[in-house]
Length: 634
Image (tube, rainbow, N blue to C red; front, side, top):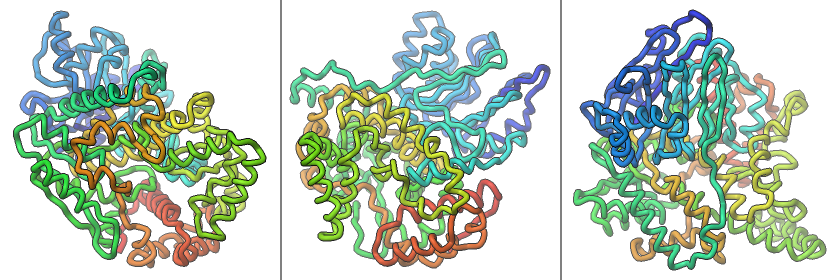
């Protein structure tokens, strides 16, 4: 795992400065403290920071082919690289290292951009082909590894993190205010745009080619919910799934450094651990985190149960409200875009603990998106079934849902009432958004009149609107899984996973997001994933004999960081101070009275903690990245 960066100048006769490439690489030193490397030749410059995982002695980058005509900088892991290496040897390629990086170079020589179809892993890389003066950028299918770029008429600048791009003085720190509404709608930033003008994410499953001053982006992979396994019996599918999971976990365990497992006390991470112990005779280290101050949901007893079951060397830690608050500015700096993801801060601290013992960490991230693990999936599937009862029945149900909150304080029921009139999937915008987005977001009432009038609502919703058009005829569950896999997963969960672990120079691997696992899950009938009230049905069934019953049958809690309580109590004064500060209000898009009403309503028992955390992240982001302040919270 590493950090990459580079620049291609498109001006005739212009050259890239070696000092600039080093400055860009230094900006992401935390991603690779073990080594650095540079290739600068005329119009191209490539930079690299290395975290040594495989072939510790000869894995230096940038790395070239035999004659030095093709160069690569690579961030990630290719899990089938040994198989590909053997294939390339039969075709006459000569290797000078044992790395997966060199496999990509020769694979590109042999197949060009089509080489991506053969790679199994997580990656963001750049290849400079000196023979054709072509720059080739590529990102893995799901978006496990990030890759950003800034393209103008005069240059292309790229990096694993935005900080590397901003290290180039030619890239201006220009704010895109039209993106604020997109962020405050979804509480993260879906799509290829960022809050900085001109800086974009290379979309998952895409590559970018620049040749002769022209840039072309192509999609090379998409998730298809197809028919092949629709006739397969459940028991046969369970056996196939367990075999596939065993294979992918074994591949993800390949490393020349210690590997551990991040335990959340749930089915996914426990299942990964149960398979990981089968691949080694060494004691595996496991890690989990809990929280101080109050009767909060605690994952540690379940994580400890799993650790004892599989005989691991187990470590755990506790973080306090002060730990959470103190790290917030650094959270914003590492995330690089505002994201409402409080569990990311817990991940940072447990990664810091893990880094003392291992260099690679496996997690169960992605199981919910692959196999339908969220209750929202179940609720909306049931809702769509109810709607088939006809318009008269729908009207009665909608009125009943609307009354549920006032009569029985059941807001989780009442929020679905407006959806009785809407056609699925046109109302579904993803896991973190309010289901009924056609009327605006929960923070819209805070906007100033001038800001509200300038909002282009369709631009805010555009990334998901495009995806909705792809799934109009899909099964309800498959449509939700598709949209979340293309938005919430790469632009929220996986960004968090990458940035927080790499902040501690730690590689995180996610076996359940191997593209073969995702394709297998997509080929299953929906009722294999969601059966009655049971979410992730086939995954739980396939792992039933491997996971303790207490973990298998417990209610899903996610990663329960108690930030809601901390915002109301220990962090109250700091939050109020930042969000009602003159600098915050003078930005012009929020009304002070409305912000104060939101904060007070949250204190009075209405849960606006996600919205408040999002507003706080947005303000800290502006101070950090636009004004380049060193923010300290106490």
